[in-house]
Length: 120
Image (cartoon, rainbow, N blue to C red; front, top):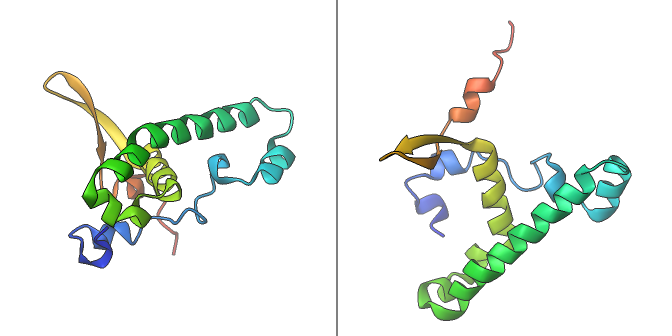
């Protein structure tokens, strides 16, 4: 919602866009079928897409209808942005316990840990 005004903008602007993420979830149906035809991944991806949309409809869409803040910023809470945020969280978060309960944390720059340094 805040974009450049956000404290987190320097990190957020480094995150890949939906188009830059090379995950099966974002493939068009034709490409999904062509690339993963015959594998169990097609069903798994479609199931995941369905689950994300159901969750969006139950939670986000309901907030968009019932809360003025969300109504005013509806474009920021689109299904496409929700799916992108979910993919970012799934690919860049870790779990650790807080008060003996597992808790997910999005850790800025953690994805650099797995990067191989370029040889010079």
